[in-house]
Amino acid sequence: MNRIQEIKERIRGEVVIALEKAKAADALTFEMIPAFAIEVPREKNHGDFAVNAAMLLAKQAGKPPREIAQIIQKNLEEELPWLTKLEIAGPGFLNFFVDSLYFHPVLPAILAEDEAYGHSDVGDGRKVQIEFVSANPTGLLHMGNARGAALGDSLGNLMKAAGYKVSREYYINDAGNQVENFGKSLEARYLELLGQPFEFPEDGYHGEDIVDTVKNIIASEGDRFLHMETALRREFLIQLGLKEKLAGIRNTLSAFGVHYDVWFSEQSLHDSGEVQETIHDMKERGLLLEKEGALWLEASAFGGEKDEVMVRANGVPTYFAADIAYHRNKFRRGFDLLINIWGADHHGHVARMKGAMGALGYDPDHLQVILMQLVRLLKGGDIVRMSKRAGEYVTLNELMEEVGRDAARFFFVMRSADSQMDFDLDLAKSQSADNPVYYVQYAHARIHSLLKMAAGEKADPDKVRLELLGHPSEIALIRKLAELPEEVAQAAAAMEPHRMPRYAMELAAQFHSFYTDCRCLVEDEALRDARLLLSDATRIALRNVLNLIGVSAPERM
RNA sequence: GCGCCAGUAGCUCAGUGGAUAGAGCACCGGCCUCCGGAGCCGGGUGCGGAGGUUCGAUUCCUCUCUGGCGUACCA
Image (cartoon, rainbow, N blue to C red):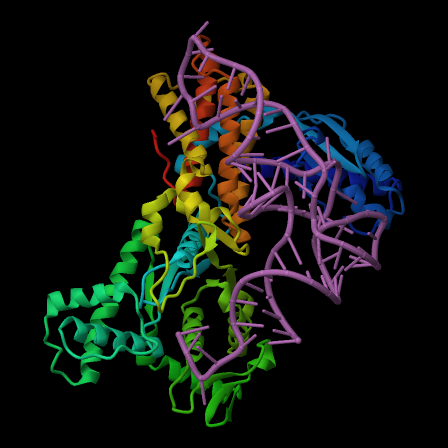
């Protein structure tokens, strides 16, 4: 249990005792103690922790909240050594002012925990799978994929830090129509590059990257596919093309700091018969019906907007059927929680996928979908139209070249998934030095050089006189540091990685203030040791938070 | 038409059933004899609109306006 939780629990205990005492003395009447909140107020002069119990009891007790608050106050233990002040304020809050020395022990604890500081075990080892990006291997990664990559990876880090067992997965859409198209496109380019007559497919992929892929294939395989029968030729080209494209995606993501545990092939579900098996089982359960020669899922019966085709009239299962088989496969692998990060354009898919899982006997709540609003790209104030087919889009590689990996990741993770995002390329380029990521990194680099300057003077953290840290900037910084474990746990539980960059900015701001107000390298040895310890603890916390969002913590800039 | 998401400061975005709604950028002032000025301090009549629930609504509900997306035997 971390420091803040400890204090909260202490307060909760005292309030409960006071309430029961009041009830026993007939000062208050109520049936049950409501689940009251102990929160850190925004406003500093509202104390360290505010309790809203009195307001929640108003109805039951039939008294105005402020009066109830007074009764609670009267029944609290008189001597609480950690409490410096207790106020009744506003509509009936009980504001607890805790002795600032009570937070100080967090500092040696941070030093001791080091890389583990901020981590907790609230996840209780539950198995979580996060599937993200899963872009079609027929092109390059674009801005939307970049956002998904940053979000998914950071969420994975967060949940791991909060004690979940995390598995990251990429679903490879290597089956279906688009692969056919991909094959046709590759074939056309292949023939073109080898000076043969060709016909480019109407809905083929026009991107330059396809040409590059084919060039690579020709470089290694030559013209040996030229005289083959077209079906076989395409088969070869598809195999080689997918391999090449996937390698590219993998490299790009790796450069972005994203690594997967599992790369899962859609084709493998067809090959293993799982798609057919799933369709069969669903038919047995009476979930499917035949209509116009196709097999339909009655999705409208469990939350979908309308019925969906599972097997086309030509006997070929749809993507949706494969996706159901895929999610069933995930459940069968024993995960407690499945998290999908999808683009908002897939939102129609959510209800029916959850519904389908429910119909197959799984708990739909164990499948959580984070819908990520799409990224709109602005250039010169205009919206850049993006089309994968036409091969016109800004790639993740280009983004990293232009604004750098750290800035890109910070920028994406900073925003909550469900806000639409305008990414102004010109702004990101021209103002990249103003990006908040540098503010945070600067704080880290500053501490590093400070500690370097004081090298050799590191005192034993357990012997440092923490009580010397009494300046408001020092106290504020210590409290900020103490908040990290809860911040991580909450962000993980709510699946909201965007809280971490904000915390990092706040922590950096507190440090910069402290640094300006309090000189560390002073004559007074005891004070110097205390301030260096505080700085070192801040360094650890900053680094750990930056690690969680995949941003580097540089020692100098 | 129907459905999903969103409308908060000049801009990009946080946030909460409660006590004076925040940050970054931009703009205007200050601050280095001294640990990194990529810093610090100060400067703000903003929750799209209308009803409702509540002791209390920017937050929850309904309607409405605006924007994005979806509404394929594509994935």
